[in-house]
Amino acid sequence: MPEIEQFAAPGSEWWRSAVIYQIYPRSFADASGDGIGDLPGITSRLDSLKDLGVDAIWLSPFMTSPQRDAGYDVADYRDVDPLFGTLADFDTMLEAAHARGIRVIVDLVPNHSSDQHVWFQEALKAAPGSRERARYIFRDGTGENGELPPNNWESVFGGGMWQRVTEADGTPGQWYLHIFDATQPDFDWTNEEVREEFRSILRFWLDRGVDGFRVDVAHGMIKADGLPDYTPPSDADSMGGGEANVPYWGQDGVHDIYRDWHELLAQYDGDRALCGEAWLPTLKKTSLWVRPDEMHQTFNFPYLMTAWDAKALGDVIRESLDDFGAVGAPSTWVLSNHDVVRHATRLALTVDNPQGEGIGPHTPNKPDAVIGLARARAATTLMLALPGSSYLYQGEELGLPEAMEIPDEYRQDPTWFRTKHERYGRDGCRVPLPWEADAPAFGFNDTGLSWLPQPDEWATYARDVELADPNSTLSLYTELLALRRAHGFGSGSLVWEDFGADAVAFRRGDVHVVANLGTAPIALPGDATFLVKSQPFAGSELPVDTTVWFTRG
Ligand code: GLC
Image (cartoon, rainbow, N blue to C red; front, side):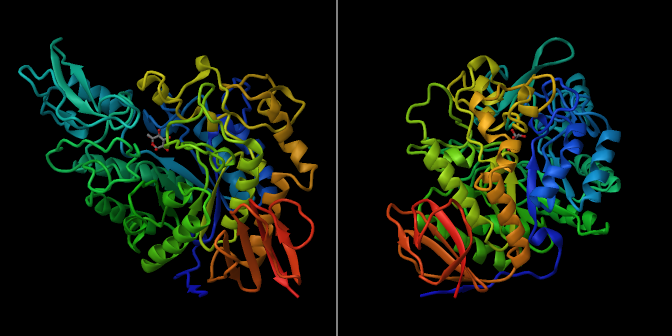
């Protein structure tokens, strides 16, 4: 029975329906030529994003950082790291984006700082129990002489979650908590001084004119009282996506913080927005992050993690519209980002590959590239027809696969080191973009340097090659974004349709959207007039791993 999903759209705020393109600054475009992307590089390539047709960009961190976790280890929240340029370069980029009608979201990393942050350096020099230590989570060790960590928690990147310090007098001292790398100490968010500091950091960027923040590890900021021991199941998702009641994920105390920030943003004009990175066990719980007085958006990771299966995909879309709709928030949709295997590869996986594991030279059963790309194009063609806000990750518009053959000596993800090379980590989705097939570093810069090696075959994915090909993935994305805008698909309702158990199918107004996730072609109505096909085909049989938008008559 077809059902109608009414998508709740209380206002006309831009973020309810926006397509937001994630820029990973290290790998987007490199104006300085040092092999690492930068802000002037982004400015120089903004026209390509305007041509693509996105509404906003989100930039992964470019603030001062020793880069132990590619910038997610911030040493100064109010400045730009020299690797990426200067604050003046940021202002220039922001102005240039706004001049093209593109909004700009920056990444806020509030769960932890870098160990090079002045507060952490002060904490190391100060005594146990001091005001300086109280900004982070320092505890005495257990065991006879405090030689054992305060509890049994394990870091997302592997190994323990505690690091012991040497006190100022040279004796072995307290331990500090780090959910991620040991160079990323967690703040104590029960401390009002931490809260006040972050209010001021938010104002710093809002005053400069940013349109919002993507909030890193939004579900980790509050830890359960008493820091009780916790042993995750052996197949647990390291970011907490699968389990309820984890003492460091999804604690209720986080909501006060978001309400506080919501009020702060509301003091500014222009519908500034917060988007939370929260990996939670259910969509219902995720929807609590976006109640009307909290964050505006949160990433839909259950959707991202759904395998290429019609029933599972239909269910997660239904549930997303229901659960986010129930709190008056738009659903978001996302298929790739800088932490997961690119969806042109992931959707063809035949074996389990948990988030953070990555794929490298020794991974068995490598996914099929042709199937992966077909599915990725079909998945995106479906996603961009859904009501709500969609996130794209740089390079997916070129159909880039995961770089699976990066030699060990280039790897940079802390996961690789902390798991003693057991998990490859996330470098494979972070390789610098190919812009021009015949240029040094494929046009990423003009020196040919690249912080991660670009696979030779990426010449075929270069933007200039794809621009010239009407059947390229870039042409498909450009067409989809234009049609999505023309039909107002970012908001409104959706009517489910039945094209059999292997299809996900719905109607948006008079446009029918059908995706074939099965193993046999699906018959489409003979009077279908196609608006877009995720890959070319003739006739009215929808091939496998293909999505179409069509009208009738
Ligand atoms: C988030 C980021 C990831 C980073 C981690 C620690 O999950 O997306 O890249 O490593 O937080 O900051």
